[in-house]
Image (cartoon, rainbow, N blue to C red):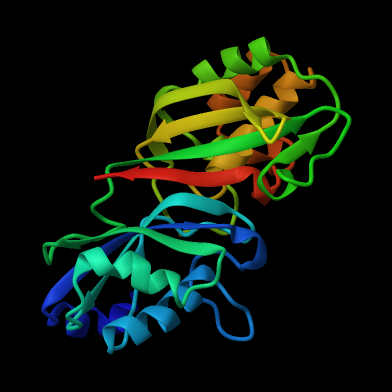
Length: 262
């Protein structure tokens, strides 16, 4: 939602919240982009205007990067449109591209903000293991050919749990002067079998995430799994608060915003 229009938008009668899923492969992230670049927000705003009959400006729980996916992205917007919330997902399905879906719609009070009201988020990062690629999951996972020490990765993940300064996992380019202290409530790693692919999934539940934080954590955890970093060295990187000590950021396609809690 554009800051210069916020007060005008809040004069409208309804505040609608949507839960949205999307395949981020073909988009320049979620946040609105100047044409010809296209982001998920561009498409959503343009198509929702046809349903509600007025100008739509979204606020979102997370500004996912180019190539990052979402199953539980939450957005809200103000409107005078009269369509019943129960009808919004079906109406949206008829005009949205197949890689963007409105899963749920609800009317919320005027003070609700998808961004500012969020209490915590869960991100998943999927890794495809094995020598053979899998065309059914390639868009949604990082393919790693060599074996990984999963037990060492699990030990390294536990070191992240708690309230800490996560500066070592913050990329340049995020919001200036952002507080690097966050709380990670849970961090785990487990196996999934998707389309017969051997998927290793990292799940992180936190109060909030810094710019590229989930992908940088994954880069460090994978380095532990490849035995390029020991668990003790990973702890020292956390304590150092220095991003330069980590490997390159993990690829975007493995990351998914799974759920947002309010």
